[in-house]
Image (cartoon, rainbow, N blue to C red; front, top):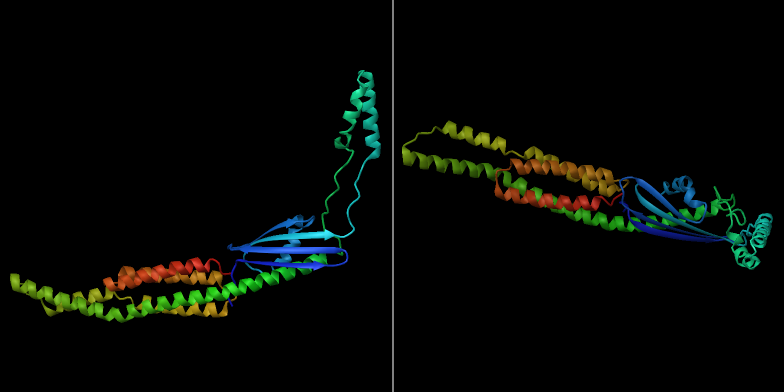
Length: 296
């Protein structure tokens, strides 16, 4: 089954000590790219989170948001009382010496912002041992929900791709039917031109010359090999959609090859009607390229 590269998944886990919520948003990308936001230390724990993501996703840009609420674990404010007392003493002494003791109170009110009085708590470099398993489990669940949405979108995309596949098949069949008639019509036009030339100027042209000219035209405009290869590519395209496992890049390659064969048919075919069918095939291939860019 095909998988879309876009989707959304979320999951929550609540324990006595933790409340964990994970949201995952995915958009298309040729490679796997992960960005992490949320509670410390998880924005810095991207490598471990990516290992979990790779169990579920092969390609795409994933935005992961991890929120952790730690019950009863609020850190006590860290206050350097010795530094604070020393700052207050120096403020009072400086104001007394300057003869402005009334300034000591206002100046002392900003003492908590002075360096070393209330240092910031150090951020975790790794999650606690009892916390990571809960986050990992929640991320797994969010990714599973993401994949449910990606499978649903992939099913709809597969249906659209097969509609375009049938369009190309129909146009190709029309080209296959027209090809023999192109040579026949060219031979008829040649005969009419020869008859006109003979009538107007008495020119004599041998039957061998006409046959040789028609044969050269038939060889120049023969697209039977291109039609056969394009048919084979269409069968391969449909098979990749049926299998659906990591088909995105393979589908891109097959569409590229179909475009190559279609261009050759367009350049060789000596018929306006065939050119119109080629135009329709090219337009449909463009639609396929846009759709396949979102297939994992």
